[in-house]
Length: 204
Image (cartoon, rainbow, N blue to C red; front, side, top):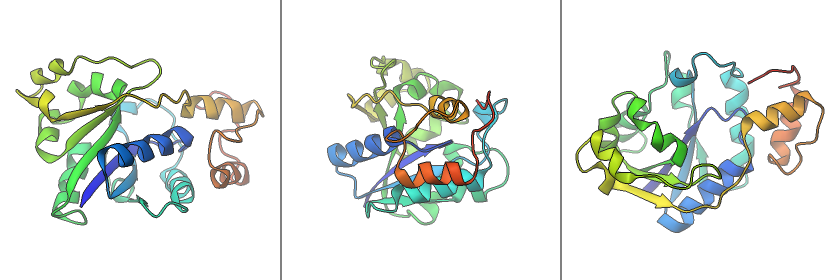
């Protein structure tokens, strides 16, 4: 099976995430896309992040109507910082054993890939799918060869769709009592309001 993996803090998950996942599935021919909320994102150690159980529940509600989308709590369940290389290794040895893994990430993340934990091992574990974003549409693939020789040959680039939605903007709008209808799935919007998330200004 060709399995897509889309990780992130998902604070909250929004329509941009879902559109990117669907686009990758259609254009790469993925059988399923698994959404994996980060437990403790070490690259955002200084940021304020909602409790993992809220972020996990929002993802579950967002994907419940799409049979091709699944949710994994593997990073939320694992103690300590969340490292993608450890997650992919665990998947290949467990629930996704025998599957071909495709890791979906934004072009902005590709630019900082050299900072990731054991980044060179990513190219052994999966095929990377880089998706352009409104402010990150061009990327020099050859720069990845500094992480691992020949790494650029193991990356697929999807040009758009460029969705200008961010979790930070959604959190800001909620704190300012502005509508987020159509920014997130209806079930996620309802969950945010029922659980009084993002109501404090400065939740970044």
